[in-house]
Amino acid sequence: MTTPTFENKQVARIISAAVGGAPRIHRYWDSSNELYVDLLTSQDQPNPGTTTFCTIGLFKYPMETEGKEFPVGIEMIGVCEGTEPRFANILADAAFYLMRTQWFCAPGSVLLNVLDPYENLSATLKHLLFLPPSLWSEHLHVMTIAGRKLTWLQAVPISESERVFLKREGIEAFVDRLEEEQVDIGDLARSSCV
Image 1 (cartoon, rainbow, N blue to C red):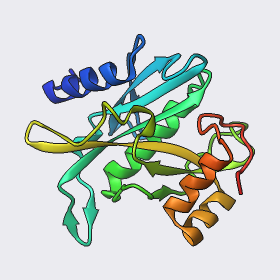
Image 2 (image 1 turned 180 degrees about the vertical axis):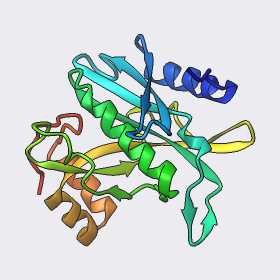
Image 3 (image 1 turned 60 degrees about the vertical axis):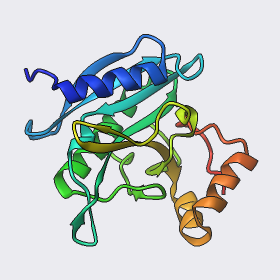
Image 4 (image 1 turned 120 degrees about the horizontal axis):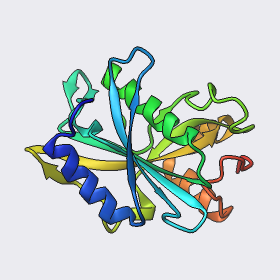
């Protein structure tokens, strides 16, 4: 077993303070057992009956844009109703994709079909949209750890029709739609809002 690094412990303390509750950390391995990511889980956070999940240590993996390394790393955070353990696997899968490909994940980025492998998880939701973490915005902002800048992005499951709307109308219009329809973004069984 690999011992958590000092930087990962710093990230864990920051996210634990931001999320609250009684967080637990578990390690997830990719299918080849070559890559791992630690995920913090906190039940009944940010609200009773929901669970928050957050990667720890992903920020150390570079992302590329226009052939250059982006100077800020990310951690992925998300929330779902109940204690659905497969949501942690979905975040881990997204993290492994970034680790392998140096995928540039920024506000408005969509990771396609990441929910598809999980049978009976959602009849409508297929993709992950990444947004600034609105549920924890007062605590999670750009900071520097061990000389590397770090920020958080919230992973929001969306449907194919929502992805098409997002592409056509833009991120601001899509977020407005979520708010107008009072969409519970943690509800994996929700209907599409468009």
